[in-house]
Image (cartoon, rainbow, N blue to C red; front, side, top):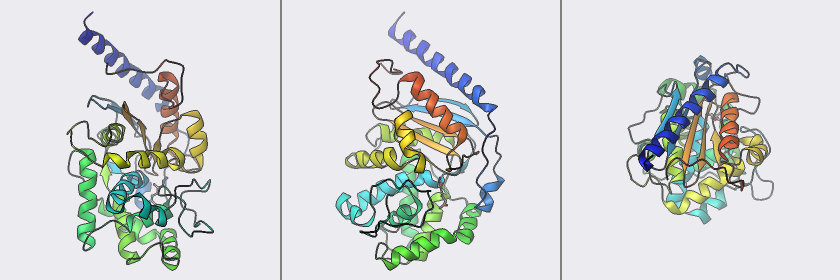
Length: 325
Ligand code: DON
């Protein structure tokens, strides 16, 4: 068998594996969709897709991978990257920490001593991060953010106005956190504008294919494997992946790191991205969530992929999946 035929065999058996994985967990109906943002409660709970994008730009996908949904908290990863580019690491660290909280994603807490939000992956830290995005006015800040997302997705992205409006009207906890951070000087600009931008970033529409390509971009030193263009300065990829690893799955982050061992980020849309540095990005979408706000099927799929293909960062067993050599 030639090397090319060999690779084709590996690719088609990996695609079959994904299809089996999808049908295995398709019957799992545990959890419920997020309903604290009224527009999100309208999602079809049965949607389910799994996509893997390699750093060479090959994409494997199964299920409803074209279905659009709002990115929600997964956006925090990418906005953190933009804030790092805008301000550099040291300044950002004075405004947002990098410590896991062990609390829920919407907890109204700040670090007792520094008054910083704990990390950029929880709502408080994300709002503070978003408030730092540069731009001469709200429109320029939004456009810079959309441009940034487009570097990762390789196509134009849009804000879902219904979800944005729904979040804006009901986001009282987020408003409370913003006021608290304004009080302690962690947010300096107009908080209504910062909150609007935060609600807009959460309402950016993507599909599961996009999630995998975005994750693969982080796996590929910040270079989008489809366009070959730099989406984020490679110097900051390690910062982004570190906070994903320690804080990306909220108060499940420790168990996730222990069992699954891959930098990841979930959102209450039911999406999860996971990044295997130097190899691939995983996107999973299934809207039913567990009590911590993570997709039930998404966690199962990532757990099985990690175990089956030795994707845990600290796995030394030698049974790693190789899709590209
Ligand atoms: O701020 C919020 O509540 C939502 N826009 C985002 C929350 C989210 O996705 C947290 N994820 N688990």
